[in-house]
Length: 276
Image (cartoon, rainbow, N blue to C red; front, side, top):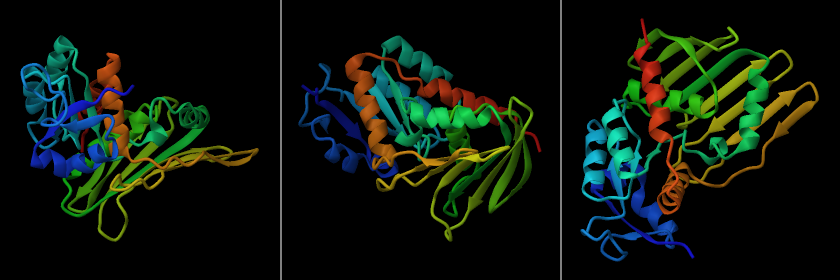
């Protein structure tokens, strides 16, 4: 039997992660704090936190107030060490609901996608990644989300540096462990849908991942081209938002730790390497 957890999201958190809509689509897993069993001190089981500046402090406060877990929507680049310490001490998982990295197509449990990418990395000649977001998006926020996707794909980057930046985006260069170059483009435009793509080019083909905006359950695409032909992985009609909240429920009810903050710390480490 599924355990229903109570949740609370303030208006900012709800807007950032479509929390009310997601919770309504998972009625057996989540209920409003007023209608589902809250913790003994009256705190909700799960607190939704908006990821704008100060989210690590707000998430830590929610945990100290009794929340069994926290879901952070679109976290901005910020040091999460103190939050990680608070979460570990309380045994409370922190799940990051990120625009693209949360997509089930590249989830850690999706071994098929990981295999496609790993096979291409063994013969990588170039990594090319493009992230598109609406005008007004903070470029560093976009780069954080793009790097999160790349790390979620199991790709290691070294020697990260800025080649060009402008009000309309950026170009970042890096190197793969085998010495192959990597190019990351960030584009702020309303002329294109908000998507993130990662392509690993090899001597005989490529591995390509295209991730949609999680506003709806539009499917991601994972495709491998090798000397034997082209293969497209089965389509998963699920949104990153629902996937993140389902993971949060699983972590809280099973007691298994979440690795989101550790991966986010790795992204922050890459950002700290940036040089013009």
